[in-house]
Amino acid sequence: MTFLNHLGRYLLMLKGMMAKPENGRVYWREFMHQCNDIGIGSIGIVTIISLFMGAVSALQTSYQLSSPILSKTIIAQIVRDTVILEFSPTLVCIVLAGVVGSKIASELGNMRVSEQIDALEIMGINSKTYLVLPKIVAALVTIPMLVIISMVLGIYGGRLAGTMSGILSAETYDRGLMLRFVPYNIFFAMVKTYAFAFVISSIPAYFGYYVKGGALEIGRSSTTAVVASCVTILFLDYILAAIFL
Amino acid sequence: MIAFKNIHKRFEEKVVLDGVSHVMETGKTNLIIGISGSGKTVLQKCLVGLLEPDEGEILYDGIDFRHMSMEERKLLRRDIGMLFQGSALFDSMTVQENVKFPLNMFTNDTHAQKMKRVDEVLERVNLSGSNKKYPAEISGGMKKRVGIARAIVLNPKYLFCDEPNSGLDPQTSMLIDQLIKELTTEYNITTVINTHDMNSVMEIGDNILYLVNGKMEWTGNRKEIIYSKNKSLNDFIFASEFLQDAKDLRMMEASGKISEKDLPENQK
Image (cartoon, rainbow over all chains, first blue to last red; front, side, top):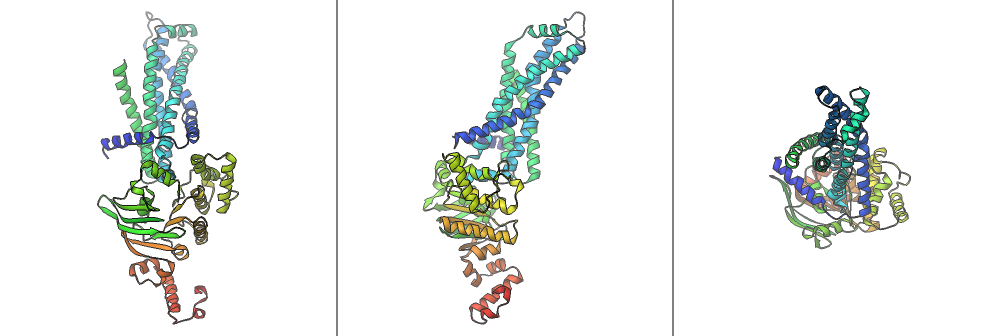
């Protein structure tokens, strides 16, 4: 199947899911369930990644910029800006593409293969609206929250590593965080995050929804979904940086 | 009543259905039989709208399904219940939640009313007491019964069953067949069953459509099948020597060459 075939079918899936829900209460429950799965279910991994990401970037910045003419506050500034601009939105979303993406693709793939999607259609339920839309909306709601948490934890991780290793004091780090802060960076990071959240949920949903075959194909589609999501995230990362920065 | 006329369906070069026409009658168990790959499942999927036929008419009580809008189709589908080959129960839901799901989606009943209906249908399929179990925790026969309960919970006018006996032992198969038959007459619904289970054909085949290579080869009921001279049908139905012997004995009995007392014990 060519790239254009996939793109066309992906767009048709997105169009198909834009329908009025049969019963708002059932859809709300499904949306909350997805928020729990995608958001709460990913807090652990996001916390670990963010703390270490901030800590390592503090140590490496200090190693590369150890000069008597440079103020130590620059370490905090660099950690802050790299975490906000790149590490939290991009790295966390790439990890989430693996964690959340593979789950979405395999869940929908299994539902397709075991005829659960056909069962929904027979009942007169728009399976795209019921299965795909809540996942995308939940991702758009929870992933930006996870990225904001990641930003805070990443910066805190840098502070922890910097002070524990004696590179700089907590006061110097905090002073550095306040210097030349550009609020636009947060806006840019959020734009990226929303774009990536859409990718993380919709691409795996596409690969899972249209899977054909059995268990082997579910595994394959899950892998393809994660790879396609990661490549799309990196591509979008470049495009958005070129447009917004 | 479901009538379909001149249904054609092909996948690329492969012709799967080639001008099939038949009428599925209300209050009867209508069987679609044929060897694997004869087009049974594709025909059933065309009838319920999971596949779009290339040509032909599908009339649900006289209304052409193919010319309905998406909204009309959605409304009609609320009158359709379907039992899938693998039951297609939602893994993440308990038995009770699976059966309650259509009620949650399409009714404004109170929780108590819904639970009453769920208990009613679960009792009807002899599954009281398994409400809190997940599909992974119950047997194949129980899954089929939950599938039937979910299919009938909204009181459908049409019931479709795809290979309801596949993977079941003969005794459980018979119970499922009897259950489908009882529900069909009890609720006066149009039941369409895909099967290649010969016991089902002989037990509940009120109206049988036999397909060969996507074409209609024979139609009739379970009594007529015994006396049919159609070679292809005979080869399919009486594939084993045991069944062929049984048929020969029945034929001899019918023609008066032997009486019932001459039949072996197991053939009476």
